Image 1 (cartoon, rainbow, N blue to C red):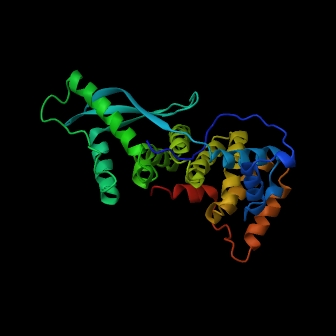
Image 2 (cartoon, rainbow, N blue to C red; image 1 turned 120 degrees about the horizontal axis):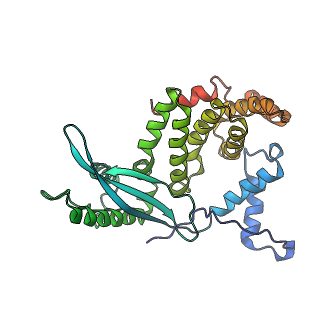
Image 3 (tube, rainbow, N blue to C red; image 1 turned 90 degrees about the vertical axis):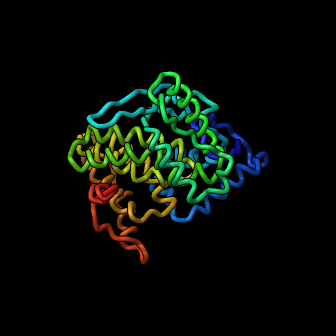
Length: 305
C-alpha cells in the first residue's frame, strides 16, 4: 500500500531545543509560520496557536486507515429486500477512540465503483468489484463472504493515492449522513442534525486529512446546531476550532459569517471579543475582501439544497 504523509492524532510532548540544535524539519515549520500569508497570529490565544501549528506539523506524519465490515443485516421493505453492510473506518498506528459506523448497500458500492472508473480506469484496472450472485444473496454464508470481499475492496481503493483523495471516495462515506443532517437542520431538528454532523465530521477528519478545508462546512453546521440548542460554550469552541483554518486558507466565504457568529457567542458568554471585532472590520474593509452578506446559518442551510 502506498504510504502518504497525513496527520496523526497522538499527543506529542513539548521539548526544549536550542537554536543550534534545531532540526531541518523544525526550521521548516518555523519558516512556514512566518510565511503563512493570511494567517493572523495576533488574533489567536497561545493555546489556539499551539493547537493550530500542531495540526499543521502533524500533516507530515504518516498514518493509514483500516476498513472493517463487522456485520450486515437484511432489510425488508414493502416491495424490496436488500442487505446493508456496517462499515467502520479505523485509524491505525494508535488507539482509535472515535469509531463510528455507517451502513451501505451493495448498490452504493457499485455506484462508487462506476464513478471511480470514469476518472481512474487505468489506476483501477487490477481492482475487481465483488460481483453480485444470481441466487443465494441472503444466505448467511454468502453475506459473510461478501463482507470480507467488500472490506478488501475498500482497502484496495484506499491504497491508490488519487482514488482515496477523490470526491467520489470521500462522498461514499459521508454524503448520505451529511445530506440527512442538513435536511434535519433546515427542519429545525437540531439535536438529530447534530448527531449526524458529528458522525460525518469524525469520518471526514480521518478520510480528508490531506485537505483541512473540507471539514469547515461541517464545523460551521455543528456550530449553528449548538447555538440554536443554546449550548453557547460548545458552539464557541467549535467556531474557534474552525477559525484558524478559515484564516490560513483564506476561506472568504466563511470568514466574515464565522467571525460574526463568534462575536455574538462571545457576548452571550461575556467573553472579550475586541480582537475578533477588529478582525471582522479588517475583513470587511479589505480591498479584495468579501463583505458578510449572509449569516452563518444562512450560509450553512444552502449546503445540499
